[in-house]
Length: 220
Image 1 (cartoon, rainbow, N blue to C red):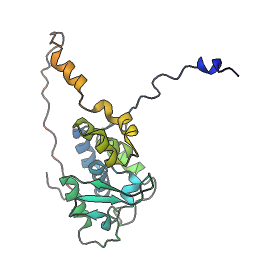
Image 2: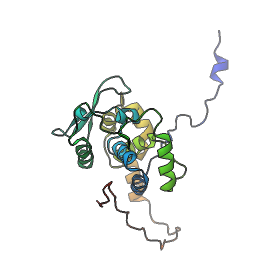
Image 3: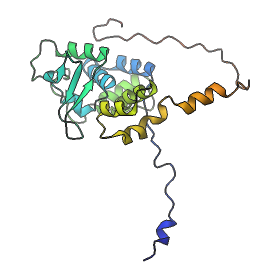
Image 4: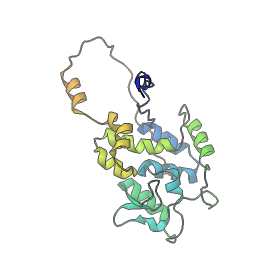
């Protein structure tokens, strides 16, 4: 049987193009400040670890290793545990949230002390996005993409990002984040293409980033 008919089929254009939305640093600050206190901790956790909503809401105090500066995801999407490296800011967050708790206690809880259930994040994320003037409103998963995108734009190797996010290999990581990474091609073009003088100079001055307001009202 001939496959000529299949060979004439054209693929849809740009179906392989990854369209990843992520937040800027200023948007991250606005979003965190717009959240209710309990949900704010969850959003901070996602931004600082790149963990999925389901991973954060099933995370227990014993999963946080303050000595090593990592948190263990025991039930990841890939079906096997992984260790997420915490930045200094991430370590401070988890140290505060786990202080005085039992190892079996959840790290992230709702305002009433209950567990975060499936889809419980939808309404508070919509409300926080509205208050933070982030349009269109984002899903919780965008926080994970923000973590990965931020690492890529800082030149972190794709293999390291894949390990941090729990990807089985670098294919998914490269699909979503490789275009954001600093590259020899981009650096060479920007270094050698002359200024043509065709773009008007802007007189707009960027405002400094708003302070990060903690749940206790202090700035940092």
